[in-house]
Structures are given as structure tokens and as C-alpha cells.
Amino acid sequence: MNLSATVFTLAAFAEARRRQASARSRHHLLTAQQKRLDKFLAGKAAAVPAFADFQGLPLGDWPVMDKAALMTDFARYNRLGLTAPEGWAHLEAGTAPKGYAIGASTGTSGNRGLYIVSARERYRWLGTILARALPDFLVRRHRVAIVLPANSRLYDAANESGRLQLRFFDLGQGIDAQFLPLAEFQPTVIVAPPKFLRALSESDTSLAPERIFSGAEVLDGEDRRIIEARFGHKVREIYMATEGLFAIACKHGTLHLLEDQLAFEFLPIEDSDTLVTPLITDFSRETQVMVRYRMNDVLELSDAPCPCGAPHRAIRQIHGRCDDIFTLPSYGRPVRVTPDVIRNAVLRADKRISDFRVTQIARNKVLLELKAEEADCLPAARASLDALFRACGAAPEVTAATAALAPPSDHKLRRVRVALP
Image 1: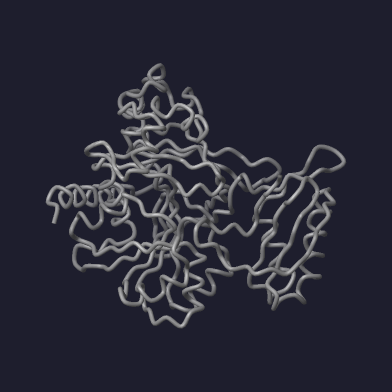
Image 2: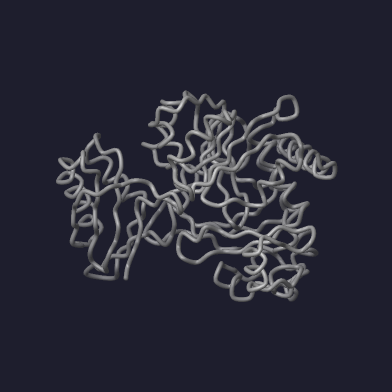
């Protein structure tokens, strides 16, 4: 057991629990958040060259950054002065500067993101997850299965702490290939993308996890229904990315933003009254500084109170990525159709539809695909999409076909996506 890892993890766990308990109201939460944010902006945030000129200024006066800016000049955003080529070289060799870990995103959009974190940041991340997802880990030893396309040094912090038995299962080796090893491990907790959880639900594997967490992909309603029916537990989401840990669902299934360690700003999505994309400022990070970082996610927020009583802002649903908003020609300016609207149009066409893909393959062409055994649902689904696009003022050519819709094992499943030449 790594004693320092255990001490740091327990300290982070206790601090996360303390912050939860002290957030007695929305006012208390935001007051504490502002104090931590102000301290961060006046100190550690300005310790990197990219932000040296903005020290102490209000958050709204800092520039907006995104993945392109970060990767173009990576050294200016981290305290080590590590360049992107140096980071990729470390990643390829499986090395890192002493006391740090380097990782990268899976590169769903073809543009991989790099990150560097300190050991303390990894233990802080782990303590926060444990406080929200496994608050009983001090009194019982969970067996946690992490099922993802690529391993991360972030997860090593759990095994180093000595309090969890954690095993990584590599989806890059195929979805079905993980069923037997998972059954042998008999996890009490599974963290996996919804595509894997659904495939596991539809397999004959004998598993009885006590808690199930979905992450890394959009959790569709149909997937949730099938997974929860199979295992008899509510699926809880974890919203995290290369850029950080943003939200964890409570026991009621509500996805709460971690506003005690991040500040969120929300930009409206064009042509939508309910959807936003977030700017995140993570004042819990100090190695790679993330201030007003523009995410690529499409979120629907909720103002409804949660039965758990937490004052943290809730996400009603994560709908997809900004990159997957269809932009279609119209008589005036082009119209934009978000993934959630397209998804709903297909599913409401026929209750028998269990899986689908809708892809914008050209400026004014859309491809709809269903499984072969659901071929007789194609006319209704195509008509539903035609009606949706007409209602938006567009008239793309919609081609309908059947296809093998096996979920990909080496990258994220996107049922609605833009794939223009």
C-alpha cells in the first residue's frame, strides 16, 4: 500500500464530504465557490504564461480558451512548460515527469486532447468521486470495474490508495471479449460507456453489480431502460472528459455539477431555447490551468429541485456534441438541428426501434440506418425525419437503409453525427 496515496485520498475524500455538508443552500454553495474562484484567479491561475496578464481580474475579463488554443501552445497553459510534442513523446513511451501523470482523450473527433496532472490532483479527483459515488468505501472494500477504450493514469490512484480493488478492462480488445474477465472479477461497481452496459445487459453473463455508472458517451433513454431492467438498479452518470470531472449523479439519478470545485458559464446553442454549451473554470487544478475553457458538449439544464436536497445545479440531459448539430440549407440562413431532436424523431416513429444511426453525409444529404430485423420500421422513421426537417425549414435528401449496428469498441458511439467530406 502507498501510504502517501492513502493519506492524500482520505484527505480529499474528507474535504469533498465537508464541502457537500456545508453547501446547505444555493447561496452557501455559490458564496464558497466565489471565494475559492477569486483566490484561484489571483494566484495559481496566473502562474502559467497564457494567463499571466489577467491575474486578479474578474472571471468575465479572462479570455475564452478551447482545445485548439490549448494544443497549439500547450506549454503556455501548464506550470511545467511541457510542450505538446514532449507530452506525446512521454505518452508514447509510457513515462511522465516525476510526480505527474500524462494522458490523452480517445480522439472521437480526430483531434486528441492531451492532459497533465500532479499526483495530488489525481488523489483529489479520486477523493471527489468516492465522496459522491462510493461514500461507504471506508467501511467496505468495493471491487470496481472500469471499462473504457483506453486506460488512464487517473484510475491508478485508486489502486495506489489501497482502499479499492480496481481493475481496468480494455474495450479496444472488443466488447464481447470483456464479458468473461468481468464475470471472473465479479465487480460490485461497474463504470462503463452505455454501449457496453447495454451489450452486457443483453448478454447471458451472470453479474450482479450493486452500482452502475455510465460515462464517456451520451446515455440514451432506451439504453437506460434496458440496462436498469436487466440489473434492477438506477444507472448513475459520471460526466467527465479529458478536461476534467464535471458532474456526478446522486443516488436519485440526478446529474449534479461539481460547483464546489468548478465554475460554470453557459453559452446558448443557436436555434435552441433550452440547450447550452459550457465554459468551465476548474479551480481545483493547478498543473494544467483551465480557465473559461469552451467545451464541445450540448447540455440541457434543469432548475427542478432534486429529492437528495443538493443545491448543486442539475443537468437534465447531455444531448451530444456541438460537432454533431446538423447544419442544413434552407431558404434563408441555414438551419441547425440538434442531436436530441433528431434522436427523438427516430425513436417516436416506431416503438420497435431499438437502435439507429443518423448521419449527415453531405451538405444536404442524411443517411438513416436501422438494424436488419427492424427494416419494416424504416418508412416510418424516414417519414418522421422528413417531417422534422420540413418543420425546421429544410428539405435534405434522406436515404434509409439497414446496416450492422454493432457498437464500436475502439471509439465512442455516436448515434447522431455529422460526417461531411
